[in-house]
Amino acid sequence: MPNQPKGAIVGLGVTPMGKIYGRRAVDFAAEAIALALDDAGLSKNDVDGLLINANLPGDMDVRTQMVLGFENLTLVNVMSAYGSTAGSMMQYACMAIREGLANVVVLVYADAPLSPTRGAGQSYAGPHRFPLTGMVGLRAAYGNFGANPEYAMAARRHMHLYGTTTEQFGTIAVNQRNWAQLSPWAQMKKPMTLEDHHASRFIAEPLRLLDCCLVSNGAVAVVVTSPQRARDLKQPPVNVLGYAQCAPGDNLRTDRHPAVETGAKRSGEIAFRMAGITRKDIGTCQLYDCYTYTVLVTLEDYGFCPKGEGGPFVADGKLGPGGALPTNTGGGQLSGYYMWGFTPLSEAVVQARGQGGERQVPRNDFVLVSANGGILNYHSTIILSRHASG
Image (cartoon, rainbow, N blue to C red; front, side, top):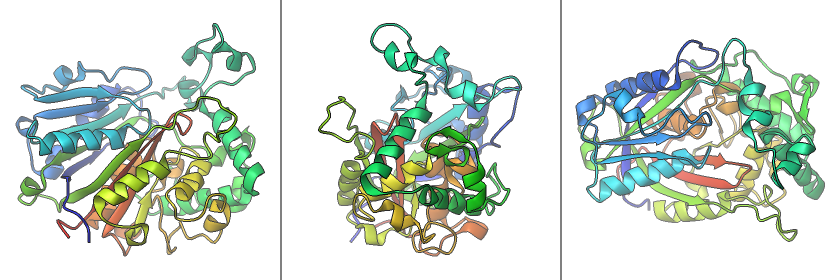
């Protein structure tokens, strides 16, 4: 039987996403928080906790509290484990609420890397973002800038070890584009076929353009409180049953397979044990999908299939609409919008509430949420439920 919830999500705010110019990250953050508080039926004065997900430009810092006008907070921090931060923030928010250190905590991620003169590639890659001196400059000397080549090497290693194919990666991309066509928030609505995937240009072999996530301007905020207080608020509470982190790191030892064996395994084991459920109880997965490969390897490490069998597991389309394991039902970061770990978290809230409209899954009792940071160096897991108790 499920265990008692550790906290409850009562508000969700999602701004328009994509090529929205002329606004700073903090402007998006203010809008998302206002939307989330209105969604919950709360006011700014009810908030006594603020956790800010640091972004790459570094303009979402602790001073954001003053810009947003929050006063007398008993919990405030800026956190960063890259894309996995959303799960870590949820963990700390719930623990603070349970210990009486805060009552209503806002979690927010905002970014505005795109401009009319700077596209996705310039925003997240290039030598301006990476040190070029000393030993750490060796990778850059060989042209290894940003995440694309690192994830490409991980995907190639998986293909070498287990026979994983481009077609299997492409199936994930197509499934998520099919979901995106059902979501009003998604950036990418144009239908995609497997042939379209194969025809898209290589970014870093074996990863093609349609294997890679979007870059978005926008923000997402969620409001967390105690399960007891959640019962009296505006929205059906989404209860937090389990959470965990795992940071396997990468010490470059040759007896390890970094980015082929990820932190999803350990963090998943802890979160499922805390929640008191098993994988069979999960009705939908909202997984971090910076690349199609990330979805595949995460499913393996959560134990939905044995290690190395992720390719055949996804090949029948079970992740898409009507499939046996609906995954990334808003289009994910590949076709929906890119807000780091807040992309899967926001869609998980929608599904657990039963507010997905055309994309609503039939089994929404328990939702698995993953977040990933670095080159699969950091991982966090959250298990959400529409049930208040076992």
